Length: 87
Image (cartoon, rainbow, N blue to C red; front, side, top):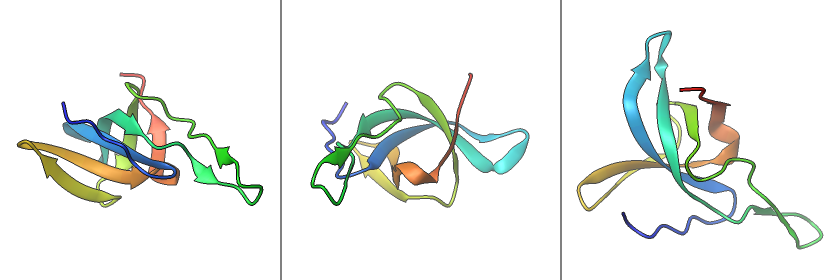
């Protein structure tokens, strides 16, 4: 797996399983990398709440699609995560 280092509050997500049956606009993915967090006015980073390995739901139009070594990923900011997935 590539060594990702997203910036600020951004995530790299590996899409899994396509759209959810309940809503075809929502996609499921596994978080493979997390940035250090956005910088607060005090200069300190505000840590990202999502952790590597967690499964999330996100809007299929969110973020930017990227391809590395033949594998597709989505880069998106933390605030575009709709929910954590129980599956």
